[in-house]
Length: 298
Image 1 (cartoon, rainbow, N blue to C red):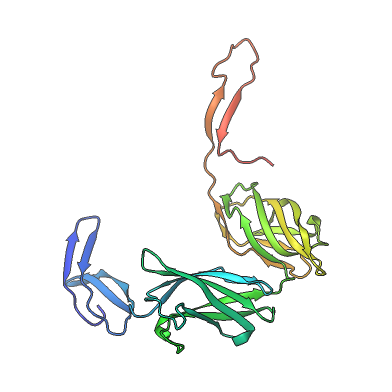
Image 2 (image 1 turned 120 degrees about the vertical axis):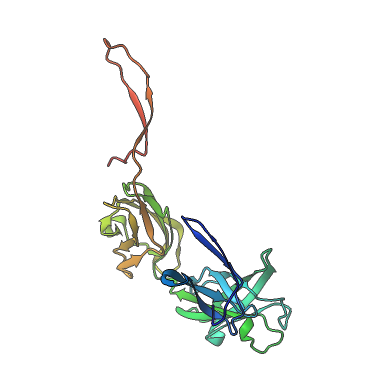
């Protein structure tokens, strides 16, 4: 393992074998290979990777969200492991953007979590309010000097405030029978666009019953506003995942959803009840059958 040997304990049964070992030191860290095989029958074995982390180096766990309008202040939640005791020159970690004064970045709050990770709140804004992608670095340095080992970085995308943008949609999963309502929140939606101008595509199948609800206020002088589009999700012939698209907007003829949509296998219908449970054979009696998982009828 990593060029060394390790004491190994093996527990084996017919269905499975577990191997316990103490990993040796691996100077410099990185990814090592370890293998297990039957002595004399080396072909009966397996090889896997084992990661050695340098405990002195900080690691970014997540930074969300990472996109905003160029005229907005973006608040990013950043989680870092192995960030160490806070020792910034001003008593807080520092943040800076890769494009200098064109983007402002600062740490507004931080806290150490129960699991030892550090959660930071970073405010990022564009001074020129122009679209673009910047790299934001957060550092826990004892002085104003840089400290690579305690610095993590992430990209932030600023978009034109007047460009259409799908901020969210719900739900993101349904059965392959479809015909469930989906709600799509859009920023920068043209006030002149009507539902008949649009197509919402799910893997080549179009959603139906599109309707638009606009926010009360439009962006002054821009001809755009926030809006919510509702529609009925189309059925699919098989389960799977796909990226839906909104088609027909003037400034963005093809607008991808920000995440994938999942179709699950449709469950079999189940009879939940019959009412009344019996009837007179000589009289016509209305019967009500309650079903679950019954496909929607268009």
